[in-house]
Figure: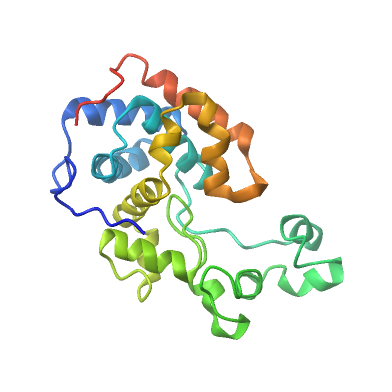
Length: 237
């Protein structure tokens, strides 16, 4: 677990980094899927500060980071995991290890809390089903932070009490810092520096072996990378 002191990176004081950096990040943010003007304006400041704090200051790093966030958060619109399923067959396809038949999946359709407590029980630091940890520490934020242990580590990394106050992870400022911390802690800057060749490894570290949405992540990366072409390789923060 990596802790980055507030004073380590440019922009960490809370002031917006230089206009050139915000401009570059803003163009890439639009290209990565954040087209709504109000949402874009609300997220740009927090994301710029998080990027500066966690050394996401090169074209490739920004492009990869925003592409992954855009995919994980459905165009930067969702700060909480959607666990509302109406079709038992769909539940079986998403969670094949948990549901062998439609009959076993049926009680969890239209029941997101019960579903979360089942599928996330006894993993990532969560307790058993009865603990309620699965629902309490469901996916939140731009990177969809999931699991009690991950909330604890992220909280230490950004100096916020996420384990005791998990709802904070869905707030835009905290969500942006978590996304930056996660990226830095998993050494994704180094992988992103490889350019397009690093996309699968970046995705694997975020999504695990399933590599869901790889084509969409690639499309977002390429769009964000193209938007950053006019800017220098090392963006000035």
